[in-house]
Length: 285
Image 1 (cartoon, one colour):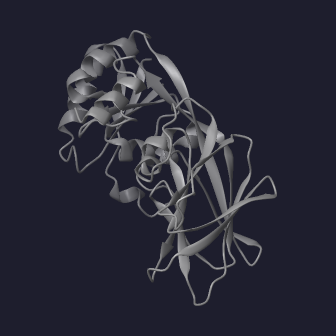
Image 2: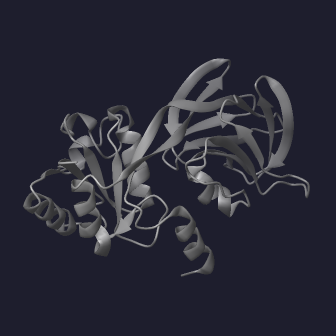
């Protein structure tokens, strides 16, 4: 790889010190590197932080400086470009950012020398329906969460898979997660940990009002429909995609979720494996 584009989280690299240091390092290796312009000019468009039209069409790799949240946002903004991402963590240890600032130069040297592999991660797509009409569609790399909003009342969620009824939950919400998202909100809610390169869909209830509710793991071919059950009153819920895009749902609305045709590719240099990150996270290291 010889052509790079840098996206930096302005709150973690406000003066682009790290971004400029990396640009100079790559230039010295004979590579080309551009840094994303100010965020503010992009905020009025459908993307949140990075205007994909400004990424050089011949870029080999997008370097994402920040944390897992920054990598998530970059993956959503740039998914249609199909350019591999490489995360450099400027905060605490994450699951998506491949290396920390201290290991960045060593890792980049290997990438420029073509000593890397590419790892694909599945995404999921969701469409919200109101009165049988679609209102919002979006994608997620981590998860789509349907959770109560407004008054603190439990909601009923009716789950259908491939057109057949699976189960009903009385709960605060439902997390529909990818393997990449299994270590996020899904894990906090008691869901299973899955290797990120796997391809499956997980359903995990949030604070279910029964002792027998458990996560359900489905094949990546599953079509999931979650309906907001009717109760007395005017309870509402929010469907949120990767903690970002959000749409309100009311009783009777439903969301259909399935594996997306789009994928995210990450550059891997084997500096640290998923299992090693998991071990350090679980041990508090």
